[in-house]
Image (tube, rainbow, N blue to C red; front, side, top):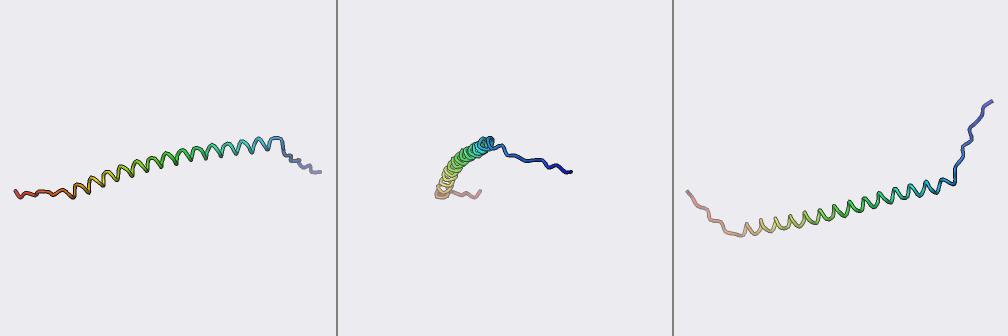
Length: 70
């Protein structure tokens, strides 16, 4: 004679498990948003620096240079 194991669901624990998974996902989302904001600031800073360097190079090209033959 074969006996089968009865599987049960602890319904009282389901809500707590779902809440825990939601909170983990929410924390991860917040961390990702912070990372995106930090990276956006870095992009803005790098872009501003690149614009300054570009402006300096363009200004340097406009200055006449004297070449001497020695």
